[in-house]
Image 1 (cartoon, helix red, strand yellow):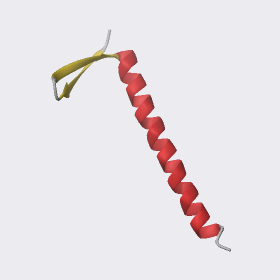
Image 2 (cartoon, helix red, strand yellow; image 1 turned 135 degrees about the vertical axis):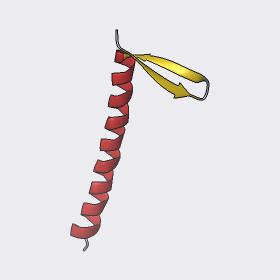
Image 3 (cartoon, helix red, strand yellow; image 1 turned 180 degrees about the horizontal axis):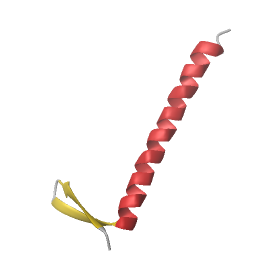
Image 4 (cartoon, helix red, strand yellow; image 1 turned 120 degrees about the horizontal axis):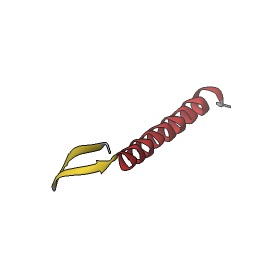
Length: 50
């Protein structure tokens, strides 16, 4: 079983592969969502000016 060591404030923390993938997926999804909202703001400000 692949385990990933990661330093935390409390010392090293071991994640299983499933936990690691879930964490990466969550952070990636958050970045995509933030980027999408930024794109929407950009689109509105440039193309929807009355």
